[in-house]
Length: 315
Ligand code: DON
Image (cartoon, rainbow, N blue to C red; front, side, top):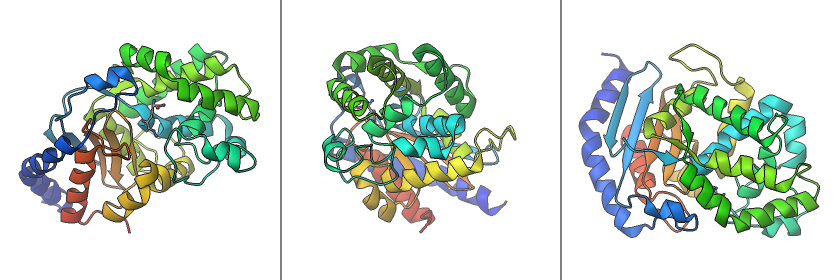
């Protein structure tokens, strides 16, 4: 057996007990409710799917159910905008720095010149990125995003959760105010409601842990899907995306996550986490109960366990 196969074998043996130990933490977390439809998510669920570059996989817990990507989608819309327009265009309108503020904060847009979002993974930045996706209409932009996500997940069935999309679109007043502010600052040129529609739609794409693992595996392998051999993303843009994941991917808990787990990751308010062991594994996690910073409380604990036991930190 190779070292990789030995490790997967060990994970297979130990994962059930690690999942159950982390699952206990769900009692301390809360399911997101500011998007009303998300409050229906199962609070005590915890699942994980690990896919290796050679196509082997291990899963644990409740990884069969679908959940919306939410902010995890922001990593891939950033990549698509970079593929459409290049770095100079994208980073003229969105910065490269963590904020330390909440993901939907407006604070620094007003306080810090030139009034552009600090990074593409906070809501303001991701809304600006949605306006940069190539396409003649919101419909075409959304269709291109969905096609790109399907290619990355190697799944023709990935689709919107229309109930979550409607729920967010009807209640997304903070995002509306951010978007109008961005329009006022000249960051967005298009019609604000059109941009928001693209944003709400990509946040509502529904996936499973195994879809997340496959998408993560493409990033782990520098932009080529190791199982089909197809290059889906230029290496440079993967490097940019992974760096943002390390510095801003877990909101204002990114520093703590870098210290305790040490892997590029992106979380979403549905409780999903997409992460990877570079060159080796793509990983998808779901645990809808969130900690006060908005990350899956049990999911983060499970990744801390895996990283400590298997010496996965990049640092
Ligand atoms: O815009 C929102 O609030 C959600 N669609 C996504 C938020 C989320 O997952 C946290 N993001 N950093």
